[in-house]
Length: 463
Ligand code: MCA
Ligand code: AMP
Image (tube, rainbow, N blue to C red; front, side, top):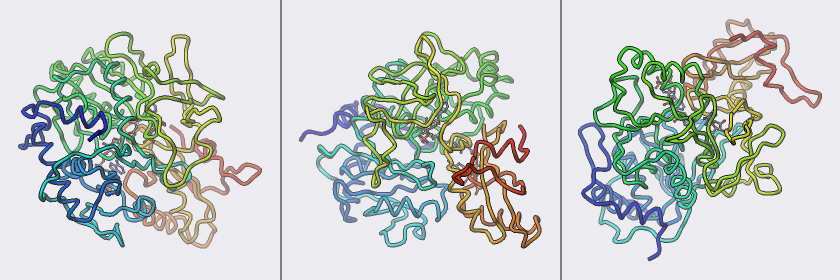
């Protein structure tokens, strides 16, 4: 049977080679293979067939790995879901994903979908999946407030990860300390699947804490918040960080002062790279060669970057084919470039700097948040006449959500704020506004569209 080249390479790793260390548990590539085949048998017994979608709503665990491997072996499409999301955040995603099965400890979030708390093992499948190329459907926040599904193919991942790993000079002997959540591109694709492609070992942890790294790890990928939190330990005990060959930051800009402070303390220049769920990785600084602080590096081989009206646009083998189940007509330019919505500048050497966003998006601790989604929840609160959200600088999370509210005057501001906080409790923690400002009016343009970029200055949210 012809199967995706990514899978062939994954299955060709020496079965005795160590693949995952998770607490006391360790799994070789051969054991991952067995786990995948047995879990695929279990999925099949639950009515899942190749091409079906399966929601994976699990904390980092061996169960989560099994669910992914089982889908890979069977050829089912994985839909990884953010475990922090609450029912109203999951509902539109589950509706669009229309899964055959959900693996989740919260069946109430999957009404009408057969839901099982954890995967099991059954008579193993004999063969790993064949031609079907879409392997996952990742939902990204979407600026309209409704998350958008971005289908991910094996080909996208393989070509992009090969280019990225060549740039980083990643090798099979490298050991990745992976503490990122496994439902975003960063942790799932660049981290876990990057290691599975290369045959590198992953030391897995279910969350990041700014602690001493375990012995023997050589690589670490994080969002800027991780490095902000780690900086005091790096300054106090730099010797703990000498074992690292590469420390990578992405998902949001790493402030130059944090990068410089880490360099001064440890001698490591954090490598910044830039990507999106829709494109996998776009640009990166090099493993060897000049890493420029404040820049996300140059286009990966095979990828073309340009700026048009200040917006970064990209074409290349990592770029997806379009949203699913609803296409977004404006996503691509007429000549086939994907419009990232990020504002960027390319210098004469091809180094890209991300200087802002042309899209309405707030990035909190590396997590993308659509202000429209938060506003919709707050606008439904009795007493609210108008509401707008924006991001405000935060020294820990890079940005936090803040809300400006126009009251209809029916209740006091104290009562209204309590109602707003209660309503925001329907959202996962990072989406909840950190501050509320009560204002007489919000900035709208002539067509009535909210001007979110002006909210912070006009309502007096100062840095
Ligand atoms: C925590 N919370 C979240 C998330 N993490 N809500 C939504 N999404 C999340 N990922 C909520 C918790 O449920 C909790 O809510 C509240 O935030 C505080 O949780 P806690 O664990 O104490 O938070 P923390 O330790 O301060 O965590 C913040 C964090 C974490 C460490 C920055 O969010 C994190 O690991 N972020 C990395 C995200 C990431 O991988 N981004 C990549 C996407 P409650 O109060 O209700 O309990 S971007 C991407 O993939 C592109 C391709 C790229 O370029 O990389
Ligand atoms: P997501 O949609 O979750 O895949 O997040 C992608 C977005 O994260 C991009 O469009 C950027 O706005 C942001 N992003 C990713 N990497 C970087 C970076 N190195 N610097 C600045 N922004 C970044």
